[in-house]
Amino acid sequence: MEIPNLPTDNLYKFIALTGAIIVVLSYYIPTTNGYETIDKMFKVYEDLGVIVIKQKHHKFELDQTEKEIDFINNELKEIRKIKGFTKTTRYNEIQENVKKLQNKIIKNTHILEIEVEKGVQKNNTIENLKERARHIIYLSMFTGFIGTIMACYGFVLWYFRVQKPLDSILQKKSQ
Image 1 (cartoon, rainbow, N blue to C red):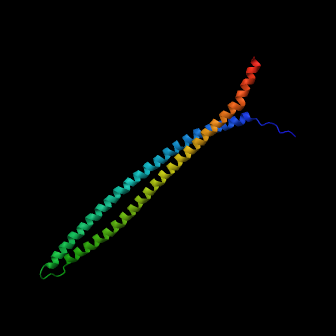
Image 2: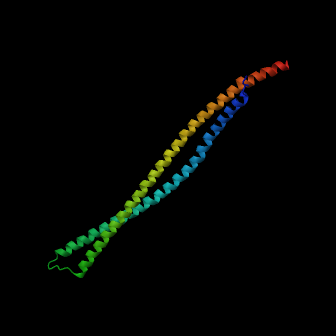
Image 3: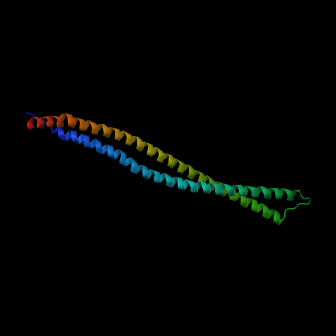
């Protein structure tokens, strides 16, 4: 039993064209994916900017509240130094205000910690997007290289093993 010869002409063309398609796709896919990644990164940077502004605002409020407490505590010390000092309603009101301000500090500290954690998460997201972009670039370079090799290999084989012999047969027939 004899095995028929496979049509190598189509196989070589298939290898060449597949390689060419891989080359085109290895540049097209990362480009479109890169734009999506850049858009995501801009959105994350935008969110990060808002978080930084909120952090600065809460830090400012925290500093102001601490200054108010220091000022009030100094007043209370001065009041206690007065001879014949007795606790009055005003003194108790001031102490009540100090407690409210201390609670405000605790609340603002907690909010500031939350905003800092959000900032850390956004930074991690940015790093993940950068890493993803690097992987896509490396994969693109690798597939582009493989596609180029396939295309060149297929076209060379097709030309030297199929087309050149066909050209010589045609030239002999025409003579």
